[in-house]
Structures are given as C-alpha cells and as structure tokens.
Image 1: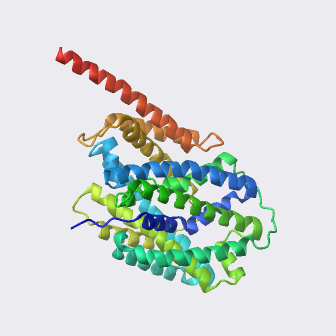
Image 2: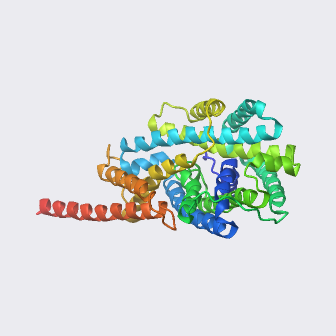
Length: 399
C-alpha cells in the first residue's frame, strides 16, 4: 500500500494558512513609526532572510523524509537532539496559547469582550477538529477555508487602504535593524516545524519552495495590513478596524479561521516533536493536549506583548538550524549514531550567546543573519579541521 503524499498545491495551502494570522498582523503594527516606505523595506528584507532559511530547513526534511526534530538528531546526536525537541514543544505550547489569545481577543472585540473565554473555547475546539481530520486529509477542507480567507483578507485590505489618508504615528524608538529582526522572527519561528510537512511531500524540492514562497508573500501581506492599519486608520486594534468597517460576521470569520489554520500547525507539530522524545507518545493526542493547555493558558494569562518571546525563539533556533544547514549541505555529516555531538552542541551554545549579544547592537539586517553566518562558519571550520585530524590519525594507524 502506497503512503499518501501531499501535493505541491496542498503544501502551499498549508503555509498560506500559517501566514494568515492575527499575530502577524499585530506584529506589523509595530512598524508604523518607521513610516510606510521604510517599514515596508524592513518587512521585505526580513522576510527574504527568514524565508531563505525556511526553505533550506524544509528541504532537509523533504530530502531525508524525517520530521524537524528527527533531523536535529543528525547534527546533535540521538540524545542531544532531544534538547531541541523539548524546547520546540515548549515554544509550540507558547505559540498555541498566544494564537488562541490573540484570536479570541479580536473576536471578543467584535462580539463583546465579556465572552472572550467563550471564543478561546470555540477556537480551541476547531483546532482539535483540524487535528482529528489530519494533515494528509485536509486538502479539500483547506481549499475551501483558504479560498474564503483569501477573499475576506482582500476585503480587509481594501477597507484599511481605501482612504489613503496617512496619520502620524508616535515614535516608540524602534530602529530599522530591530524592525528587520521582528520581520525575520515570524518565518524563523517556523524553522523547527517546516520539515514536519515537507517530509510527506510527493515532490520535496518544489513543495518546499512553494511553502517558503507562499508563506513569505502572505506573511508580508499580513505585516503590511498591520502596519497600514496604524498608518491609514490610526488604529492598531484589528477588531476595532473590523467593527468600524462594518464587516461584522465577515471579519469574525477572518479572525477565527485564520487563527485555527495557523495554530493547528503549532499543535500538530508539538505532537510530531513529542514522537522524537518517545515513540510511545501519540502525535494526535499530544497535539490535542497542547491545544487544551494553550486554550487554558489563553483564558488565564495576559499575552499582549510577544516581542521577548520572539527573540527567545530566535536565539534558540537560529543557531540550531545554522548548524544543521552547515552539516547537511556543506559537511554532509550525520551524527545520529552518537548519543551527543558535543562539538555541535558547544557551537550551538556559542551561537545562542552571540545572538543575545547582537541584540544589543543595531545592525541594519537584524541579528539573525549575522548570528547564523557566524554559527555556520564555526561549524564548517571546526568540521573541516577535526575531519582532517581524524583522517591523519586513520592514516597513521594504517601505517
């Protein structure tokens, strides 16, 4: 019996759904103080950097037919890779809670703040339904949902940019480099997940390219909607924009379904990552558990400012994927048979520290790209040096 594979079109739909997100629109509002032209440049530059890395990360999974966290074991060892599986599950629980919180807050802003907890439950239940349907059976459902989201988001864009009146936005001290980093942050947050989907693609290279391109274009669109809402409507609350535009149920559908299609990927990937920790864990039930925890967290805790969370994700996963890219594409190493690949783990720690230090410096291209280049250089140089020494020792023993 042939294993069912996802098509290029289906992968594109998955990542369209990932990009249409209230969290991305809200992050886009932070760019307004830069002005539209400068803000747009920061959004585009950050997404080019982030989506190139997203493509490379997804291509590894597509080629070896393994999940993101199984691939981590190739660079960090069978036990060393578990560190990243656990960190990934933690960040995905956080993302699930944040997405449900943002979606419920926006929905509650349209239909009454007092029932916000009800919207948390509604969104949580829909995510669980998506998990039950399963990633390989979502083709038709996603086609309908994405078509509706596309039309509704176009309407929202016309509402925001229709007047063309620029309002002055207070300067909050955001630099261009920091804005680029916030733009990189969203595609970067998907690096530990993309292989969970490209591993099942029937045409891995094309599916990965489609995933990165579709995500990049639509994510930029979401950022621009957020930035435009602040500049052209003087309003950063997306719910209030929807209310003022008189979209009502239409706006509510945008908010609820965009939240579900994005957060489903987080919860599902948490389940996939759990299988790397223990084969006894069931992907589907872990995903459902993560959704339940995220829903409870969204009801109980405030999650309005996620910038620190985004920077934490960057500092953990930027050096991780840098090591994997260097190992897979340049050094062509596979350390799965080792329990711990201490060389790469040390390089990752250095990359983590460098990222945190670079956060104190305003670099026009942000700090993710410099950090990844430094980490990759360390990985390649140390790999070539140690490889050469290993070959010399083998030659000495042969003599």
